[in-house]
Image (cartoon, rainbow over all chains, first blue to last red; front, top):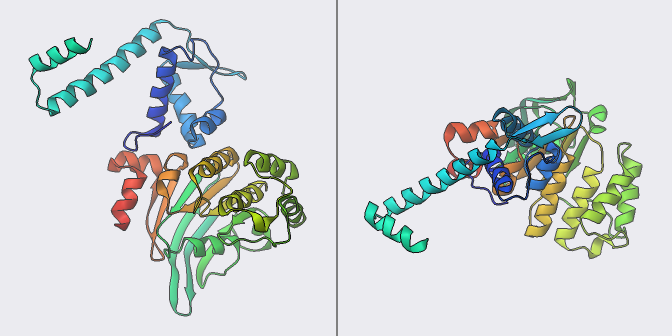
Length: 116
Length: 228
C-alpha cells in the first residue's frame, strides 16, 4: 500500500482495514493477522502495528481473545458507523476540492447530478 | 543497551564524528540519516568495534565496546566482505564458523526468499544480489544489536521491498536495529526513531511519530529541511 507521508501511518493502516471490512474482504468476527504479521504485510514498524491494534481496540473495532489473537468486532452497528465515517471523509475531500476550483453550490450540485 | 557519550573520531586532524551522544534501546528500529560524509559509517564502525573513539566512550550494556559486545552486535558494512572464490553456500559456512549466534536454517530461508541460489559464485552476483546476500548473512545472526550500513543503496525497487520486509521480520522486542541510509522515504514507515547527522554532528533525534505530529511533516520532509 502507498502511504501519504503527511498522515500518521497507524491511522492510514486503520483506514485501510476499515475499507476492507466495508468491501467484505474482511468480515465481522474474522481473525486479524498478529501484529508481527501486520507489520510484515504493510511493511511498517512492528511497534506501529501494535499501536494499530491498540487504537482499533479502543474504538471498538476489534477485540482480543486471550491467547488466541485479535478479532474484528462482531457488532454490526460498527459497519454502519464505519461506512458513514468513510463517506463523510470522501464528501469533505470532494466539497473542499470543488470549492478550491471556485465552483458554486449550484454548479457542484449540477455536476454531481450528471455523474450519478 | 548501547550508549555513546561524546563519542568522537578524528582522522589525521579531520573530525569524522564530533561528540556524538546517542542511546539505543531494544525493541526499536532506528534510522541513522544524513548525506554521504556525515559520519554515519564511522559511528557504526565505532559501535561495531572496528575503530576506536579518539575521545568519549561507547558502551554496550555498560561495558566499553570490545570482545564481549562484538558477539552481540552484528554489523553489515558497505564494503563487500566475501572472497571471490566462494559461492553462496560457502558464505553461510564461513559465517557459521565465525559467529556462534549464526543460524544456518535462517540463512537457508532468507537465501530462498531473496531468490538467490546457493551454488552461485559470489563474484558472479549483480550488485542487487550481492546486497541481498549481505543482508541475508547479517540477519541470520541472532544478534541483539544489528547495524546495517546503507542496505538499500544501489538496489532496484523489487530487491528493496524484499530487504525492507526482511528487516521488519527481523525486528523483535529483544533486539534493536540501526539502519543508515540517505534513502529516507524507504525507511519512513518502518522506523521508531530517527537520528539526523550532518558533518559529524548530531543535528536532531527523536521518536519518528512524535516528530511527525509535532512538526506536521514527514521524516522525508524534515530531512529535506535539514539538508537542503
